[in-house]
Image 1 (cartoon, rainbow, N blue to C red):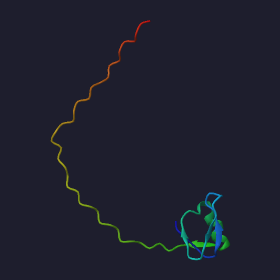
Image 2: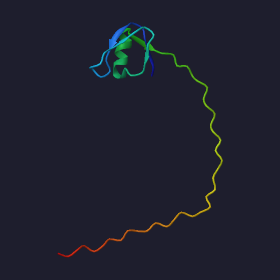
Image 3: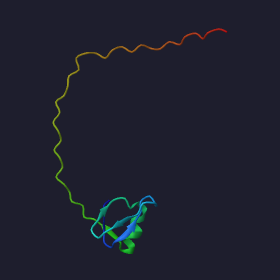
Image 4: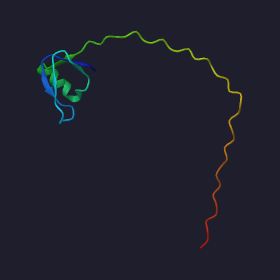
Length: 82
């Protein structure tokens, strides 16, 4: 789910690299922190804009004329005597 930043704040996905988020930024990687950030008023759920779905491509059926080649079964060889 996408979220929109309402208040600017520093954010770190990996706990090392800090990114300064600005008002209006949209992200989807808040994970389990999303509920707390929404409760504190830092982010809000972004509106989902539905795009027109792509039409399904038309695929002509392909006729198989040749039978599949026969598969040889492996036969175990006798172990070498020592």
